[in-house]
Length: 485
Image 1 (cartoon, helix red, strand yellow):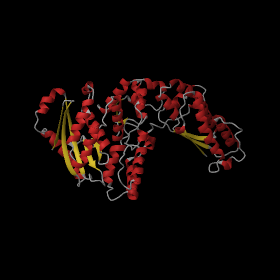
Image 2 (cartoon, one colour):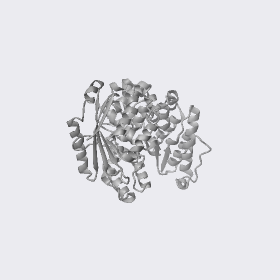
Image 3 (cartoon, helix red, strand yellow):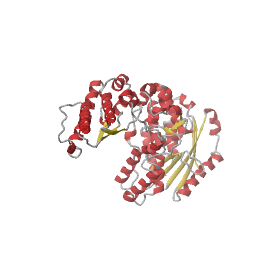
Image 4 (tube, helix red, strand yellow):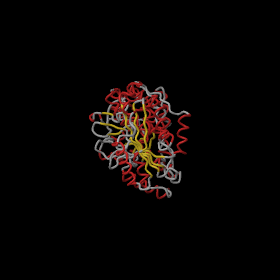
């Protein structure tokens, strides 16, 4: 018999009384359904009654006692998002309430103690919990000290996403059943890799696709009768920036994390800290910020020492955070008119110039001490994807034989932009080099050859693409030069 509990539905209260009332309502309903619904296991419980109790721990005990006394099939307990409510307490800095729930003789801890007892008695065969941060189960201490953590076990890693083989089979199925004449496997595969792939849960593991995001895409692809969805990011992945400020304790720490991930494109971590269990108190230590981001699915492992943003979806979300935390604005009538005109004239130069004058020049002066080409290409992608998501898909530094181009824009199948491919190479200069860049009549030859070699590689794979290539020079917030080459 299988008892399913979904704690994702558990609302967070401001007091222990509210939390317990919410918990009781959800769990008692599930227990009553388990024993009394005809489509569940009512046939085994015809002579069973709860005895008027509406306490989850008591009700679970009564069920397990009846199971043992009547030699019924043993119970498997599946708990989805077991730590949903406690994690919300953590990110809302409700530390005392979190402590009361996990370390005192609370309703929550008592419930897990009863599961532990059922496992010891043999009435519960297995309890399988899914969650996010490993802190809650660890902080329950003796209440549930029999848990075995599978998160970082190599044999279980692929449970957390789709492998390339699985995703490719999924894509073939969706194209065959829902695609149209423009549904090219190669084009769609490239799009999926750029936006949803890249998660590694061990340094040496193969990358995995985010299953929620991938299924979000396929669902909308099918609903649109084989057209690429205009929105590639599931809004459920977007979280208010406040959670990062609370997690890192202050604005300065949050800014530092954002700069490392967007500007430096790497966040250092100690592999020794990549543990499958640690207590809430450890999250307050700065060396554990990267570990928390990893468990929250906001970063992934590049190697034994470096975390990165796994794909364009997370880059876009982190650019939202960056702009919010630095109060940068880019939704004005000026942008709308420039990007609207692009549909008619197809000229990229005005978009780059508008990006420079309306966005780069908003940045505070101290930002230019850290800004580099990583930030420039990420920010320009973020802006283009906001306004041109019906025209193009985007890739930042895709792996191709001749290297990693800064930005590739591919016209979406089924639109008039299809087979229009733009490759953009950014070069960023410090303020002292302004006069040198201003004196240039054309880009440097090595930069021209670099971007053209990228275009040639892409054209060999997608022979119908009409290639256009650009070199962009930016000198802090002082100068912008754009050439189509």
